[in-house]
Amino acid sequence: MPAPASYDAVIVGGGHNGLTAAAYLARAGRRVLVLERLAVTGGAAVSARPFPGVDARLSRYSYLVSLLPRKIVDDLGLRFAVRERSVSSYTPAERGGRATGLLVGGGRARTRASFERLTGSGREYAAWEEFQALTGRVARRVFPTLTEPLPTRAELRRRIDDDTAWRALFEEPIGAAVEERFHDDLVRGVVLTDALIGTFADAHDPSLRQNACFLYHVIGGGTGDWNVPVGGMGALTDALADAARAAGAEIRTGHEVTRITPGTRAAEVEFRTGTGDDTGRVGARHVLVNASPEALAALLDEEPPEPAEGAQFKVNMLLTRLPRLRDTTVDPREAFAGTFHVAEGYDALATAYAEAAAGSVPSAPPSEIYCHSLTDPTILAPDLVRRGYQTLTLFGLHTPARLFRADNTATRAEVLAATLAQLDAHLAEPLADCLATDADGRPCVEARTPLDLEAELRLPGGNIFHRDLAFPYAREGIGRWGVETAHEPVLLCGAGAVRGGGVSGVPGHNAAMAVLERPV
Image 1: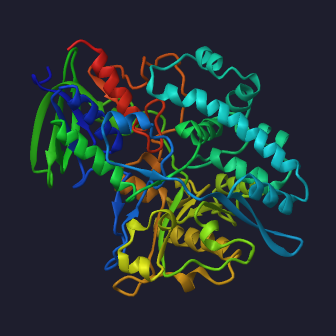
Image 2: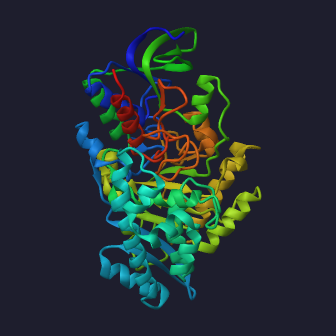
Image 3: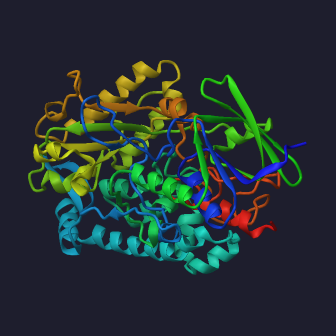
């Protein structure tokens, strides 16, 4: 039998979702204990100084904010802010032997002119505006439901009230909608990338996992905007930890949970501390697990779910200056302020997927890059800002964990070299000439593969969503909030919950709401 419940809730894992749940429950007067394996809270949503002797505090893993509801910030009184990027995206290209590109941002007139300059007509821009309007309508109707009890599929469809949008996003592979509306390969690729962030899939994958990924990337905040966290991503998790502690929650780092034994009305949590020599156990009315479904199964000693696999390549860099572009019509400070797409044409994305699916490193690895410090220079020491230093964050696509299993170190170096070569093709100077060096004279470049994320953060297979994203509606076997498990005292409050994924706090909020609805 579980130990007597000495806490109302024990939260396993101090990532941003666990901290969100802790803050809500503590503010409601519940006695809450957070047990975090690492020495610091935050999980993947942390800031760090990865380069020795360099005072640059980077968002090491997660790096942009879209899905965090304003409701959570306001409910918890968080001292946290985001800033809009001045440009949405820039995609370099070569047309007719000349360097050019597509700039989305700077107002409608400027965006329209960029489309027309690239494609030679106004057709693609008109299709772009029409599709943006379609996803905008869906965003405004779906995003508020993320912090409500799960709607049924029929209820969500009625709420969207747009058969064309429903078919395009929920029923047919997203590739059909992209190919039906757009004709230019580059424009098609820019649209498709939202379906492939951290998701290894083809545009026409019949599973529709790329559609679920696309949906979550275009509904954030009801607008789909991806904003920069002021002070870095760690500013959010620090604010959440402060809010939880201020409300009375206990947070213990260096405490690794090793087992959960659920009963009918309570559960027992076993843990070890430090090097593992010291162990303990505690009882709780509820246990909220801010970890993957695989980790939850292991803690319960149950059959694990289907293995997850990540497919992204993360690179953090510090530059002494931004590189010059071959396309001289755009300022690098604009091009890198938004999402800078590399090797992400529609056909190039399909080729990269096919190569990786066949077990080879893509010949032209696709990636997207942005410069946090252009929008928020506070992450750099004043001296670095004065000297013109800038950060670059690169997120690579179609690099599944399977590619790295034979030799993670060698393949990491191979993918990094190939990815930066694709960027160099659009620069007027090698990126290497712009890289800062650390106190030991090494270039300020840090690359992370899915296997690195698995080792450092215990993301299963390096999957940043813990498993494939799910459409935000109820289905058989899923509870009212999408966080329930087969054991009444145990809830899943991590990214693997329904409506999880991304930096949102939504699973943490929903798990807390599920607890607060139950009788004390």
